[in-house]
Length: 502
Ligand code: AMP
Ligand code: MG
Image 1 (cartoon, rainbow, N blue to C red):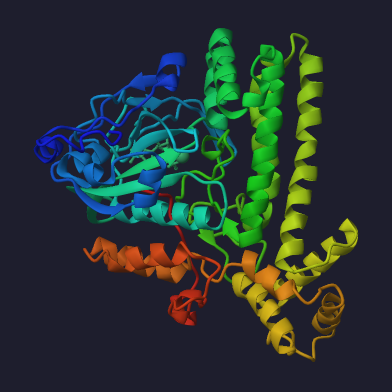
Image 2: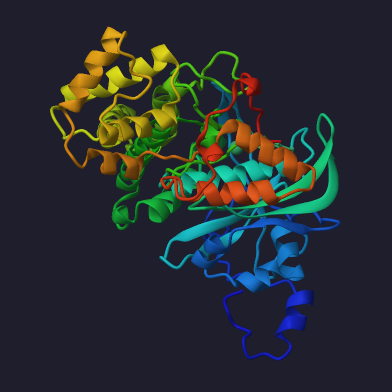
């Protein structure tokens, strides 16, 4: 559906009745037979656009008007797949909370195809909530409006924060009622990703025992995500691919830690090869700083607590490494050596990236790594001890430089905090406040605001979610935005619990 029908007098009529072509390509379907089941999305009784991402549609070179037409909305709901789509459900395995599930896969999703965006990047367009597939196990294949809007909202917020992420092109309500604890409005999310290859995709391929399939997957993933390795031997491509995933995942998790993001379900099927954040189910942002924070109702052991995320990242990468042993070298010992050396880069890459974030967040004129790490950790210790809002603390610190008065959470009767503050003042220069404000968000998806907007949407009022998406699209600007968007939850909101996207 590249802009094509501008001088066609029947264009409007055609756009109402004919499903539009999207200009799809199908490298995954063509190259990775064995890792999917061809599968059509389910018909939808009454598709209606709930939210639509115009800027993403433009980035993908899609026709915005046509996409919002009746035919376009039907296509986005999976009700009438575009003629050039080749819908398929992808196969993958995954370690869920540490336990291995050999056969997960897209239980309620299909890949329609790939689009090459305006910057020349190949991106998947995938529908979630589009009906049961051969991987559905006991599930109904459906999705409901609240969680799909949540995914839309968090993807946009993360994107605006400069954090690699999948994004949503649209959420379409289906007109169906879907049974969860209560009957809820059904919805389909159209998701865009640099690819949907996951650590779990490699685990699935490895578990088939089909070496040829594993080789194809490695070559495909390397060509798509590590073009610099093109032309190298398969073993070299596998090693380069692993080093790349180590790198992008370390950087990604450092990004999360810098904004207080808790993914909540870092299972290996939710870890991308591209380094994009995927699957916004039980995720949430920290309010008061506490490394032990867990929001997810099913994370009883705190496996995916805020402070555990870097270590879990390494654990997940080790699972990827295991699958690559036979491809990296004919000699398993040498393969393990190569992969171990690459994995050893993870703490260095993560630590370096985290420190860079913290230096900018705190406005430090860079000193030695050890000194700067101590300043950063000292600050976090104060926040934790005093239960201070993580997001606002950095902004308040910058404000204190402008006003000359210490932030309210640095009381004079706390020896540790006072000495930290005076030490910090010696480490910043005149422009620090400006640098800090450029990287420390004012607006993050506050849990109480997200819940309020999703509840309204479920009751048929889409205005609050639309406003929230707009505000979160400008995370660093206070502008003329109502101050309540920058406030932590009131005490009356109580302890927060999240649930896996359903
Ligand atoms: P997630 O927690 O979204 O990462 O999903 C984990 C696995 O459960 C994936 O294989 C999903 O496709 C599958 N799944 C989740 N919800 C449903 C559902 N309602 N119907 C079918 N499969 C589902
Ligand atoms: Mg998932």
